[in-house]
Length: 331
Image (tube, rainbow, N blue to C red; front, side):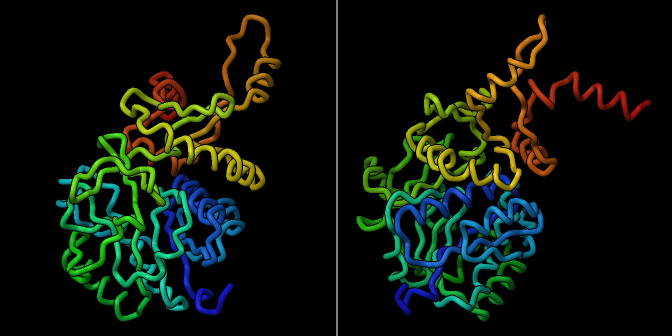
């Protein structure tokens, strides 16, 4: 690695085990595309020890940071995304002063081509937000760590909340012929249009895919035999299956075996192999109904799914199970 690039890094953030899966896929995609920069992940205490060990096998540095919450309920309610309050935690990335320049990427992004040329950009280079084109989207941006900037951002966040980018007015755009961020969401169509100009779909030139919205790739299920992505509920239809398929293809080949090594399950976005299903059927007694084994879901992940309206109404969160639990407490 050249001396000029040794102190540059791609940085991401995970606040729980679910988002850690996205971070792992992102890290693998960066390595797959031949990056020469360091990989750093900021991890909050909500990430389990086992998942941290998995992250350490992909990232050069796994750094623990505290959760920052904007408390800006007015803007977040307007956006119908109350869970975004903790996204201010990514401000910690400016404290990484051991690096001269970094590219921050959300854990729900996927790299399709080498993007090391982003380090030639100035602070702050970012893509316009598709819903708020006069603001930048903080999913992918180029920045320079600085103790002074970090302090100013914390003060700005405390005074004005999460919806103000005034510190970087006059920033530089990332969406051009060299660098395309393809922003896709299950609730927004058509995806892949230029956020400002509304230009035709240009996904073929995309180097980064950003999965926007509440529903993330790991919230779906995947059949590795047919290589098809399936929704977990009628409220979350499968859109852009080819892009979700790219994410799940990398997860299946590189991340799932890694998680198994550390005793971690696949979680909400799980899949069952033919061997698992066959094993379950072979242990059934005569007259029993074949039931696929259910993956373990941590209390943190289960709480997150409830908050996102993705309760497992046919499984662990069914009415009968809830009533049974209530009866236990009452007794």
